[in-house]
Length: 363
Ligand SMILES: [Zn+2]
Ligand SMILES: [Zn+2]
Image 1 (cartoon, rainbow, N blue to C red):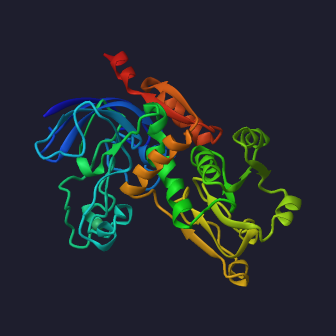
Image 2: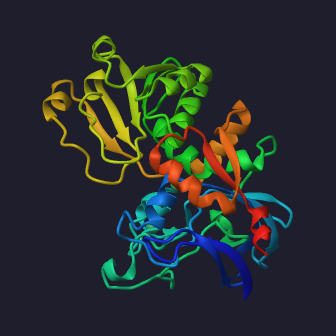
Image 3: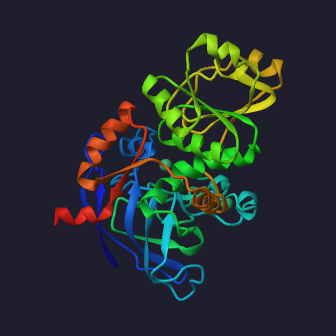
């Protein structure tokens, strides 16, 4: 067994604290990764506090992990010791269902769905059809730790030219926004609306712009309008009725990145006929949709969940090729509870990334 240091929440109401645990050594098809950086995702806050009512404790969050391969099993061919690699939201899937066979592991229909990097599997045994657990684990521990052991097929290559700390948030925030932009066919010249300008929103704006789209960001604060201008995209205050009227029937695609319950109705009229608004930030019931707005111009309201392993590699390579990445602020892990508080307040535009070397400060 490998001795691992990390940070965990022991209960929904406690702060994250140092936590020592063990991981199995790398099996034949697995690599052992020394974690260098881990991004802090809004879902880490939700999960640590059991806000989705599915958290198994102790909870070691972290699914935007970048590190170096330090050991590998005898069957590993895709990665070598010394490689800079990444691990996103998933570390395994059933591999046999239709979505898995089509390379869409993030929509795995296996009895436990995909195995989450932390707090996995997605469908716990208690909710699985036969009560079974195909992964043999009730809980997984994520990247707020110094070591991860992952099957080679779920390990991404960090391209040269992408700084490891910048690559980390691309593994969740990046692919979560890239995947729907790609799926709904966003192309050069399209008008794309991004709702919300937090960790997901600012990444979505950068990606859509790099795809050649004309991007408008909808936000609630004037500071974020300035941020939008800095990114070279238009910023609009989301309840400015005059502007919303002007923008009616003009968007080819819209993406809502707001990480909690919100109202899509003001935005649906902005879509062109037959176009889609997709939600990626919220996993709870939204305000009721006025279907008159949807039906009148045959519009669609859709959702999208993270992205496949192939999409994740693609967005890493896309960011390297276009020289873009999330805006980040590096923090020591000792600051994680303060970072959670700021994320909850919603006034963080950049992504916090934990420098995992700071774990040694606790020794
Ligand atoms: Zn995430
Ligand atoms: Zn599957």
